[in-house]
Image 1 (cartoon, rainbow, N blue to C red):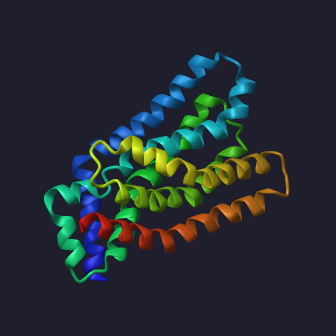
Image 2: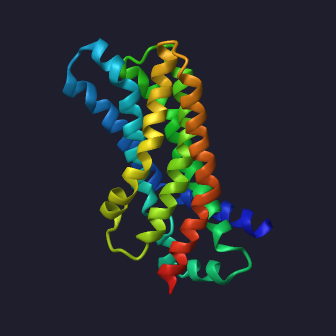
Length: 222
């Protein structure tokens, strides 16, 4: 457990010291949401209607920007081979690095979303639901994204390939995240099922994705 917590602490410290990847993700999120009202015009009703979908899509794309570096840095400095042969199972290493990605990228993006919702005239009743759905759904983005990061770790400039691989797998999270917000705003009974399915996707990702990511890493290290 101490070795596993050390992997998590190391990734958090590196993300804090470097800051570039996290800053790019947050900056991209801010720019996309800021530019959209300029392109659509001052139609507040339209902005309010599409705000949940825009915030979710922009968050997903922003998180993708930092996923490519999840294992790449460790491969470049040789620490990935050390982790693969160390006492900590590679599945636990993948889980710790995915958790670090969520804490440094997914969580800040989810916290930033309500502030950006002001630019899109998001309805006041939607803010709490927006944060709840993003906190429930963003772990799936980090953990499922770790699989793509592991598969493309040796691919030069694999960001585009990573996006092509992962975007279809993120669709269920996107659909149920947006539908949960829409159901809450319309006082529909569909909020409960949508939110539960969204949470189940994240829980399944936390349990299963590290296994697939570790298998992909072993394949890449052969």
